[in-house]
Image (cartoon, rainbow, N blue to C red; front, side):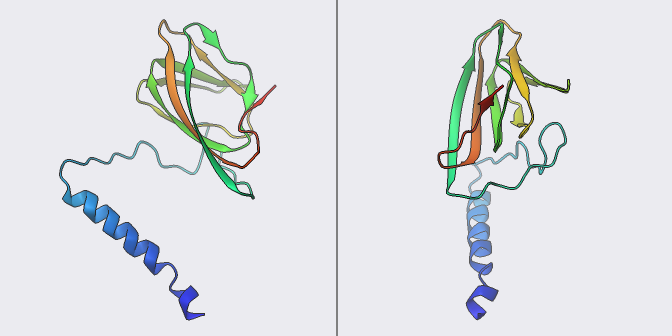
Length: 140
């Protein structure tokens, strides 16, 4: 029982050691791009699904003048727009406009689509926190 009571101590010590080692190296910069409990449309994120966790990282290139099909994500995902500009629109009309360098915490279980209205390709990296063998995207 006593071991469980203090099980939080080791992760705390490790976090302090790691953060202090970054702090002492003046060449390393750590910038928080986003830290949130809700998606970009202000809806609270759902609980993580039960099962064997599976992380998927996709680099998605969307050509100019391209609209993606309406789709939804059953899992939490977040991304960083590397290049270009992207507009994300939910089925109920909420809109988010992203530009180079912007982070996104994507909507979950909400129908939406993305569109590249620009003249250059969109380059976005997206991280999905799902469960092994489960879909990360479902098309309408």
